[in-house]
Amino acid sequence: MTCPLLRPAEQSSLNYFASAWCALENMLLAATAEGLGAVFHIPVADEPAKIKEIVNAPADYEFICLLTIGYPAENAFLPRQKEINIGERIHTDVW
Image (cartoon, rainbow, N blue to C red):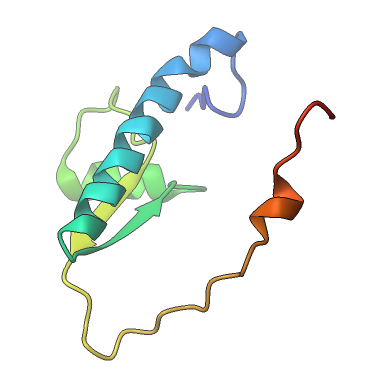
């Protein structure tokens, strides 16, 4: 099995991955706005083959990411977000 993400022939061959992930970012934002929980996962190791088997996908299909969406449990664990000082992160006219 080839893995174009790990061994791209050239930089532009990654465009379809980037396009999918940009679309997923918008789905994550939309789901959150609707009060839904969502998780993005990139299949690794033998996961792509197992997923193909579970959903009976053609051999030439490639699963580059998975998105699960649902209503969060009332007692769901919510990790504490790291606080970021934007003033320390934004730089003007410097590298």
